[in-house]
Figure 1 (spheres, rainbow, N blue to C red):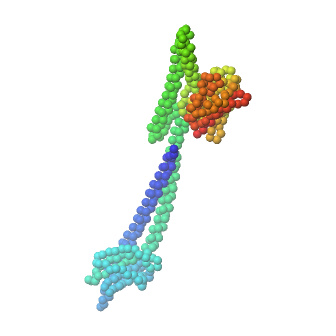
Figure 2 (cartoon, rainbow, N blue to C red):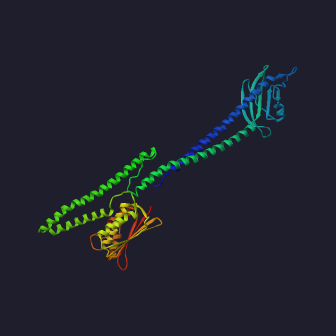
Figure 3 (cartoon, one colour):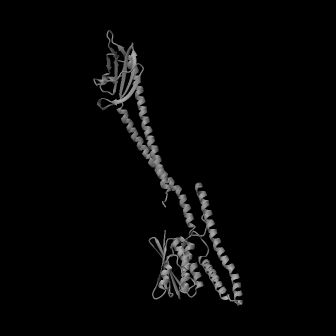
Length: 438
């Protein structure tokens, strides 16, 4: 299953939102600056046009026209100054001195008609052209005002560059602020995880009361789930123990009646009663081995194994149980499962050993290895091969075959582990179990 990271998703979403927002903002700013500069230039050109039109007058005793000396600013008098005007009429062309003899031809406009556009001009200038059609003394004219927009364009791009730089710095600052906010708030999740994980090492209930408001429903559900799980497992184990205890009295009475009976089926009844009695004793032993139920807890060997060894020592006083494991070793598997697995293996080793049983637990890389060695007479090779076949088991009550693998196999398979059996020289059998640490 692919894991989903909320942090990565939020970071990716923020980056995309920042890029889209900042890009759109930059476009709007750039467009806005362009519009403002364009409108400013047009308004100035229209103001100059009023002065030029007002100063336009016919030359006395001639059909020519001229613009008076006070009709236009001095900027129109310098060659290629970037400010130009051109007046066209029937057989009339009046140029500003700044336009000099640069070839410029524009179409005539009707009276009251306006037009504006941009074009490339003289000396690599970028011209903004505004035209107006008007009539004076019943003579139609077209006034063309031209201004070089290159300085404003350069200023606009410099401003856009600095705006882009500011936006990038703002985006970077916002990104790191978001990461800091995420890190700070995800600590609450880490605290919840640590509290739940601590429940695997100790019996006390984790305190999930101090969590953010958004996580409170999740914490409540987790708390209820943990408590329900613990109660259900405890009830199940207590029910089995109570059943075993309660059924002992009727069985004892049945055995008494069977001893007093001389019927023909007495041997069969006795055999069935022995089977039931053996099953009850096995379940009681399993309950004693696991002890108090603690579902969800990891296996703390230093805390959980000594009580198990003590119980087995009382059950088999003639067997000396040696242990070899690190005191700080903690297995990630469920405590109840591991105690049942190790207890079952040790129980069978003590049952069929002569005087000594050795338990060794090691970890390397990403696996845990459990070794149980007894000094009994071992098993025939065909029995070992039969037991190693998936789903196979031997009668646990037969001498030399009581390895209890029916329970062990279920636990080992649930953790994707594996088990091996081998006879050791000069006697005894070694059980090896490997379990993943993850």
